[in-house]
Length: 337
Image (cartoon, rainbow, N blue to C red; front, side):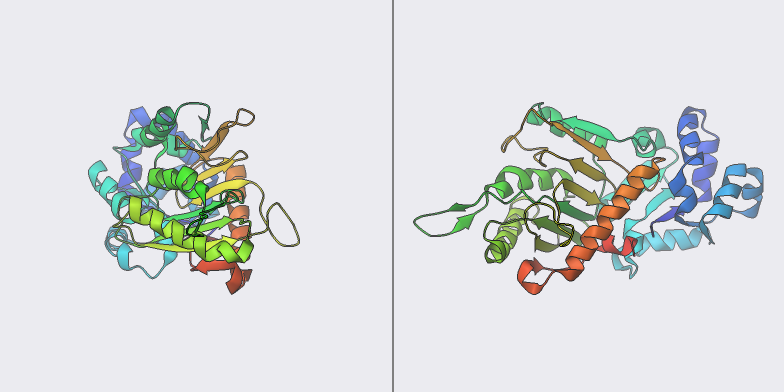
């Protein structure tokens, strides 16, 4: 995993002197990701010698020394960064909470200060959350908005059944996909930022009854969906067709997943999470949300995210022109080999 963590020494000083975040500090100390990620920090030799955890982290992980000006300059130039990994990084900063919030809003990255970390405690647990789809739309959405919503700038949606319903207007002979208006639109409306200083990257993988005949139709209808809900957001979209069901020889997909630069969603029963339309069954009504694997201490979730990302990257890379529309670009692909 090529994820980066930009780590300011003032952040570490702040949580070490705050008795109310002792549990979070312990989580950071045992985090697999924090010791194995590409860590760019201005931590001094003196602080390293005083703190056994920092010494272990630097010995075990990939570590680059810099000064505070480097990290601040990196944040200031994120909108023009030539390194896509910077827009998938996590930023642990010695800044005021409102400054970190603005950074997240502008660039779609997780930026946390030592002062606001108590409100972000769920980011460091690694055990995630579950949403019960049997609950009404309002409860599901408010739970997500209040507790789970995070900035993001890149998204991959895998749902082979999302667009299998197909309607043809007998008068105009136009084709519509109810899954876009019933499920996808409400999902994107809940997740997508209102605007960013960078392009938003979105890759959708789904199946279609007519296969390549409907790839462009689906692509254009998803773009119309963006105009309804996010007029000011610049989105680079890639829509990819895959055969229904799973075929290991074709690297196809069966279950539903969402991968972002700040969270991961798993569901075996559809992604109709936030809408009041669509189909909600009683057999498997729970959807799990895990984030961020960059700091969580659950290695299983990190590995699952990496495996899914590699599989999608392979599928996208090998897709012929007839089976996709839009772009093959997504900065998340740069996180794995």
